[in-house]
Every structure is written in structure tokens, then in C-alpha cells.
Length: 279
Image (cartoon, rainbow, N blue to C red):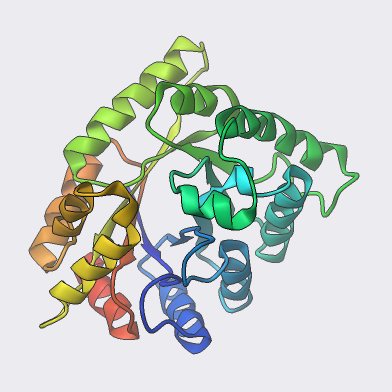
């Protein structure tokens, strides 16, 4: 299993200097990917913009959207953004997409959230056509970026199996990934696709004395839309080397291909400490 790290595009105290330094450090290893999240109604950097900046200062590490909220974007523009980032990075993009669960992001974008699942399916069907036709460039190196789909509903998993290369899980303990991955594999098999989908997972961490509360508070705020469940998410923040090692082993045993760990507090020391644990 590969281990990636999240780029801190939504945590408190972020800056352009921090993001670029973080990307350079991630590229030095031992990480295999650099992931970003997507929000509109939040104090965070736009994901394609952040990854384009990271692409300019890195050479090796894969770049991943985890996930971009596809229905908030025009399909042609979304395909062009992804193709541009893939070309600028030398083919290093993994494109994770989903419908998004926060109504405030749709409201802020002036887009009706009703029917977003249907629109997303249409987007997934069209994006590869845009890349292959070559009318809207740049044309990615064939067959284009790997496309992963997130979501936990039956409809989301069916879209994943029909249109994508794999499944992107939204986080939680290894047992949650086991359940979601099993459903993804079943949806893939039911559609008669050969092989198995690529499986990505994610988690959250904050390493160091006196910062656990700050990390938990970030998660409570970021996931406030879930109500009381936000407290469970905050409790899952990994705050020790032992907890991270156990988390990684759990995901590896569950068949995860790529696990990306996102910081819940800012500071370049976070990626340094995580690198020590991983290395």
C-alpha cells in the first residue's frame, strides 16, 4: 500500500509559503501522493489551483483531488482544468470526484443541489469524451488521468463501477473502509468489469505536544454539517505514532491501494513528524 499526505489547504494558518514548502517536502519522500480537499463556502484554497502550484515545485509525487465536487463545475471547464493540471505535472494527476454533501457549497455557487447525482453521472460519461475528442485541450496522454469516484450510496457506487477507474473512500477507521470497499468491489463485479477497482482511503493526523485539541476543533468545524457525528470524526484524529501505524496496518490489511493522511493543524513540522513515522 502506498502512503500519501494531504496538502494543508483548509487548516488554520495556511499560507502560500507553507503550501509550497509542504509540497517540496512531500516530494522528497517517503510519500507517494499529495491530496487536496474541495470546498466553496470555506476558507480554503481552490484544489486545482493549489495542485498546479504544487506541480511547479515537485517532480515525482502524484497529485490527487480528494475530492472535487463535480456538479459545482461546468463539465467542459472541469475536463479542461484536469487535463491542464495533468499536462503541467507530466501526467501525475489522479482525479477524484463526487457530488458533495454540503448544501452551503451549492448555495454559494448558485447551483441547485437537486438532481446533482444525475448531473454527476452525465459528467463522468462526458469527461473522457472531452479528453479523447481533442477539441478542448490540452489533450492528456492516453488514456488520461485515473478517475476515482467517492460516495457511499448505492447510486454513487454504481457510478463508480460504470465510469471510473476506482473508488475513493471519505475517511474513518479501517472497519469503515472494509465495509465501503466491499460494496465497491461488489458493484464493480456486478457490472461485469474485469479486475478490481483502485481503492483509496484517507485519514487525519496531528502530531506533537499540545495540538490535539486544535486538530479536533478543526474537524468539528469542517464537518459541522454532519451534526453530532462531527464529534466522532474529531475523535478519530490520529495524534500519536502508534495510532498512525495501527491505522496504516488496518487499511493495508483491508486491501487499500493508497492511503492519504491529511493534517488537521498547519505547520511544516507536521509533515516532518509524519515522514519520521512513515519512513
